[in-house]
Image 1 (tube, rainbow, N blue to C red):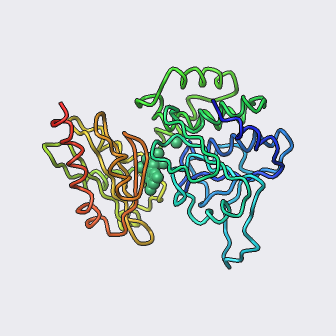
Image 2 (cartoon, rainbow, N blue to C red):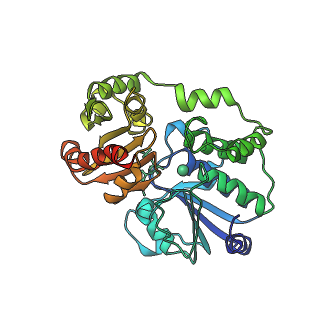
Amino acid sequence: MIPQNIINKLKESKNIIILPHISADGDALGSSLALALALKKTAKNVRVYFEEEIPHLFTFLPGREIATKYSNPDNNPSEIPGGETVVALDTGDLERLGKRVEIFNNSSNKINIDHHPTNTHFAEINYVNPKAAATCEIVYELIKELGIGLDNDIALCLYTGILTDTGGFKYSNTTSMTHSIVSELLNYQIDVPTISYRLFDAVSEEKLKLIGKAINSLELFEDGKLALITITRNMLAETGALDEDTEGIINYARNINGVEVAALFKENAELGTKVSLRSKSYANVAEVALKHSGGGHKNAAGCTINENPEEAKKIIINDLIKIINSHKTNC
Ligand code: 5GP
Ligand code: MN
């Protein structure tokens, strides 16, 4: 159940700002655009602010006319937008708002709606439901409780978030609730084969070349239970692949027979390395991400380490080995 104070605040507010997390994925984008489209139907002033341009992968999503990439190049305080109410969606902690944290701080009523168990409850009103497969499941319920009707555009946004966060209904977060929500969404116009192809199968020549280089970087440890993949800026430059093309590559490591934990080390454009973590069953990668100031879910988490990829590996590898071996000692 969505807390009543969230429903009330959204009903009372005329000006509402919605913020997904940085490097927004399908769930962050889908939940933000769905909620914005729904609130707009009740004659509210709604804006979504993204940290970056929307990835090409998601340019089919509707509602982009009410979304803007945030920029305030002169750091002018009077240029910072503020709303009566701000809603952070799918965002585990304040750092995940990037520079838009100033929009969050500049708004009056602060709401945080998420499904990451590591969420730091950083707002005045927090609703975190780790049982939801995607924030889009929570937003679906919220839209219903606000008494707003679904339509084709809202359904497409929600479907996209649920589809991507469940890996096409394949991950352990998929529940009967997931399927029950999706069964209703599919009453609207959703081109299932086209969307699935676009999100999971379509690949550019540049991305395919990057996948080749990434697979070549594979390192296995702990009798093949731990798989590491590295993507450097050089690999991106050599293949012409985009930053967003790294999406999904970690699954090649995770899917290897015998692998329990996979980690992808992506060299950032600025300082540092973005670490993506996945586990197949028992290992809790969120624990490791949390230790390094990140977060996520038991089987999918991430963090940033302010070192190059080789140093980042040295920093995190022992923690990964520990969660792999924790299983043996637990049973
Ligand atoms: P990915 O590896 O696909 O970037 O992220 C996997 C999961 O971990 C997602 O649910 C994502 O929101 C979360 N995540 C990734 N990086 C971070 C981080 O730096 N901080 C937090 N709190 N969550 C993260
Ligand atoms: Mn999510």
